[in-house]
Length: 398
Image 1: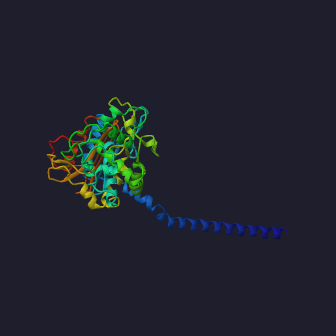
Image 2: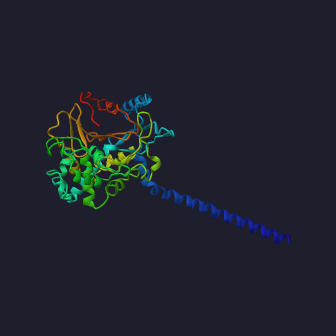
Image 3: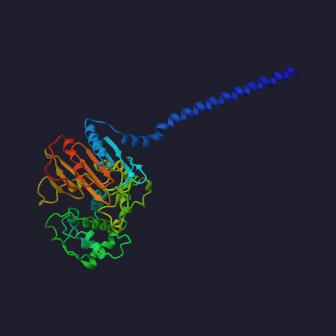
């Protein structure tokens, strides 16, 4: 009996040892497999992370000292991202996304871009032009036969030379049910029905007017047979990977919790009204990280050809005097050494925004704010210093 018990114990010990060996081998093999598949599994995520890495330069301190100082003086509440040579040298958020709840801003906080939205409208038109679906010389009446203004082309809309009245004034007069958001087609109907007077004949001079870009968005819808929001999402946001960007209002975001509220001078949220339904001149929501992706995509030729973009960056207004001009969706200004900068600013419902790109050194300055700041123009006063240039005497234009 004792001998049998010893045999059983020995067998059990052998079995346990065998099981232990198999378990260790299995763990080792799994560990080996994990090591083998890990690089392939995280390649895409790693690329995204590396694209957002901050690589400090000698210019980082210039930006940080400026924004830290104005933030400390309650002169800035927002997010900033700056690049040089396609590398992020500075990225930081200051202040609150909502002053009531004291939620703080982050680099993924979403802001209404206001007139910075116009470059997305312009590029949408450029894409349709590349596809042969429209021409810059097409009359607006080609798309809307009842359009009551004669001789106005797509190019005039892009470069603000149409002479059309500002919809923000005539809609206030003619639109009755202000509890319902007005759409681009509704705005167009008001123009057709009431024909508010032109400011001046077509192509006579430059006059910045939001109506131009609302009509361009309506043309995108007419030609593409898609809503403007869907067209931009399908052809721009998704291909670039702008996952935190959308068009509409602050309640229509997949990431609604990231949307920073626009505030007035007393830090009170500003209410939305019927004009928020009109898109093209405004209406894009995005964050500094996504706008950096947009900036990089414009260099890649992935969205539109370099030659098409180059045409849009040419001064389109010979009558504009000084170092500033306007192309298609971008303002243009020249530094003291004649280096051109392409930029746009915006203001709407408590949001102040600024997006500037310099192809010479592949630098960009992205500033998004969600608090009314009537001295916002002075925020860009550090740009000449950033480029080691003499400051311009001309007043900055947002």
